Image (cartoon, rainbow, N blue to C red; front, side, top):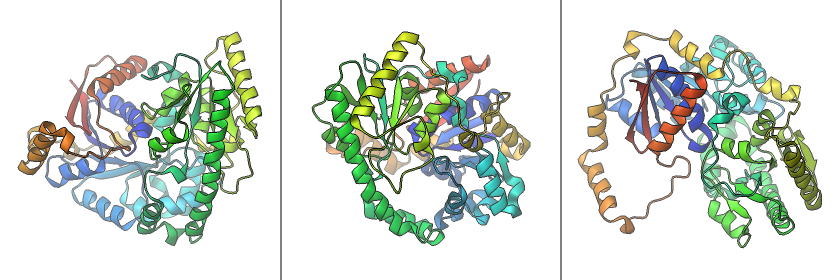
Length: 453
């Protein structure tokens, strides 16, 4: 069976897609991991035969509804799990309106959910298609658990000293201009579904600037008042990393790094500092101490994630608690701290100790299996598609005269590194006990094919 995994934010989604691909390929399925542009290009050219198209959201914008209908008309099946998750808010009600509609669920054959709360809310809201809504859990949460600890090897740029991970999600530091941010949400119909959102965005960004300064001030204070640990500032994939480099310039024990998955940084830190980040949930599941830094009363903070871990309201309190955790870590020599996971979090995240969420999703996919979804992918045709005269000329010009071309950084989806991907697949196979050899083909800088040899 052919399975096409849509990847948008590589740093957030790649590892869970590789987990799905490894399990599926071991069962004999052909798995393509790529961005929307290349999947649609291959589909329209007849290079990619029918199969399952697994996407990262069912947001009811007109463009997405039209694109999904085109995919269906090509005899593909659509499944989805929302990678935004919605776990950072106490209620899932508004998220269910903003990110789904009866039409987009109707276009899908399966909607996978992170936990009990989103499953129940979606089933109630979209009862006409409730049989398609399934509580499987997320493959991303699979990888947060201790079973996969050995998968997360030390990051390439890991500091020599123990480090505090600062996970940032500052919307005011977005790579996209605020007016373009507003335009995107307008075009996607968000303001029609939530009339208060337009005003709230302005208020939220205003508050976010204040939060940004508080973090800059706190990081500078920590860096200048301790010699025991370093700080790794991990910007959100859509943040402007160059802005952070300006804000924190001149601090040698502060490292601003976007490379590698946030999960590997969580695993190798001694604690995680945040405000309003999904990373706080991941750190809690992973057994890492969480420092919720909240130096002023926030109206637009994410109350659920900010209720996790130690609630810190001052720079001095932050310094004392960070050093306390570091010293306890040295004494116990333990990488993980056992923390009690709240029932609120457990309602949002379905964790089945008997079966991975990725395996549950694969079982659903296999229930759709049909010979028409197993036609071979025409790789020769794919390469010809990628190397049409115009594209080949552009590629050759870039290779010959790289300094003459201004290449805009693809901060969401940088090119695949085949060696790195293969090492990740080997680690997954070893952890999962998969003996069959898998083949990994790099079809383009942003398209992978994974299958059984």
